[in-house]
Length: 443
Image 1 (cartoon, rainbow, N blue to C red):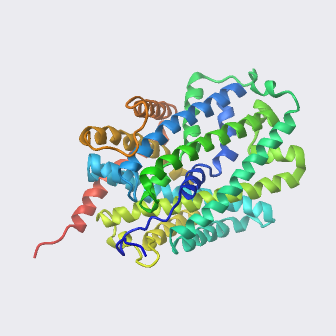
Image 2: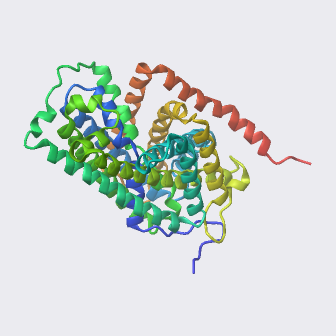
């Protein structure tokens, strides 16, 4: 029997489960669509691959930092917990305000709609079914997770294996289509000149596609032997993602060429269609639907833990902070997050929200990893079960590089960055207003 109190999470996730969460949380639908946008901002296949390698190495640096943070504080809530302890309630609330109330449900709504698009395309359902199918998918995921983390992990493992199979299929098809002229896929595309600013700006959508590695830290309170499991799962899972991403982009370039990739609206389907016709496009549509569905499962599970931690802190409705004593799941937080995601799905207002909060999400990662310096300074004599290598170089490289990319993006698209900062700033009066409302009244 568990020795954990009835109002606490139970550590039920193995190393395999945790690694699948990392892979499933990062690989959603982006890798099947975003490479075309990256190609449009570069002038050669080599530049495309360089961007994906740089983004992967940079994300690996961030993942190693998150591995130490998770090992130091293996609690549900992840970045919210680190910010609360290092910098106080206000920065933690602003992160939760941006992520748990906007970014998580917005990303769930967006990816659930992508899942429904591909599901309907594969099954022949008309477009009018897209929103109902997306909402139904969210309801199904919430329902499964209400039974506890093991049920959610089982679903995650199945759909992560399916999405890896879809990526392997794409790589094989790309190599078959190349037929001995792999070198030309990296050549310069003279018909597509781009500026250096566009090349730098292309790193943000690359990083966005690599995002999601923090979901395991959100679920750290349910990982077995977390000081050992979290670093291993984060490292192995993210290394696997980088390999998958580089290989699949090479497959796109080999099969479509740089110009073909830049002109494609659905590179995965176009690649499959070249070898297998419409049947191939249907097969990969099923794979993308599985990948998107698996991502939604992780985003809902992780986001609900952040929301539950905020509720337990009194930074949101207290009822949201409850953990069901039988299933050990944050059932009210799951229902609240799922409901809000469905509202965004049916209203169709999620795309703009995501554009507005992408900068905020990566700012959250920057400040989250910055807490590592606080932990090292304030707990200098406390042994850590895992310490990030090459400290302080790796966290500094991540913080400075990501902040520079965010700055370049703000210069290139000031409206989205400005709205992101405005959303964060609106959290300040919300924080003080909530504290005033929730403060106990004296008689």
